[in-house]
Amino acid sequence: MTSPSQNQPLAPTRRLTIIGAALSVLVGLSGTVQADGKRDPAAEQFIRGLGDRAIVILDNPTSTQQEKADAFSKLVVDNTDIRAIGKFTLGRYRRTLSPAKLNEFLDLFHRFTENFYEARLGEYSGERLDVQGSLVRSPKDVIVMSELRFSFAEDPLKVNWRLRKKNGHYVIRDLQVVGIWLALEQRSQFTSVIANHGGQIDALLDSLRDMVNKGESFDIQSAAKTSNS
Image (cartoon, rainbow, N blue to C red; front, side, top):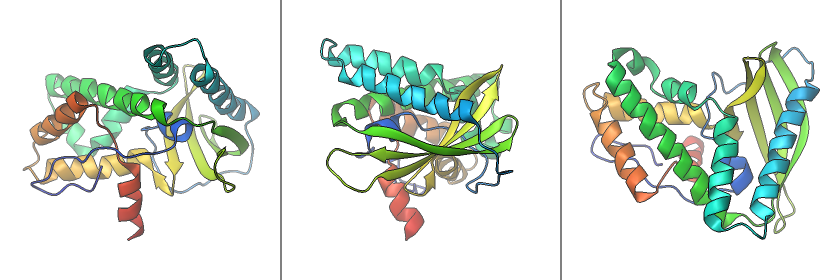
């Protein structure tokens, strides 16, 4: 998704590596890691386990592409707080929405996120996720550091995962890749669309609906270029 202007819809997605990207489009509160120096082995194992389960799904030679898509989508959805993510990306405009409009947005955001997962399945080429450590920010807030290693490249891609505990279990709340915290970037772009249309959410809903119907989703590469320019 490129940075939207007043008259531009949200742009379509481009290629981003499967495991690091598809377990994302998740929500965080800060782009800066501030921690007390402690590690959380359970949080590290949570991310390690998700990576292992994703690989089992993607490497299964007996599954059809649709079966892989369904299983991978369920894995991600079951381990992320998508409603909280969606609400976060609306910023201050969330308070202005009626329950009906909020539910319409959250439904589109959920489908928008599923598109992101499914679009990545055809790009998988043997990536492996290597957990490097973790930093505890609070008893319910942990950053897990990892590296995504590729079969076709020597240098790994650094990926930071922000986890929260919800009802005693970890859920993914944001992911930092190529220097971008994805939910913060989405909030910036979504609220820009709303602001450029007089504070009304309808333009964002129309853009999301169009992207969902076309099978399109978030463009992290364009976001990274914009951030680094």
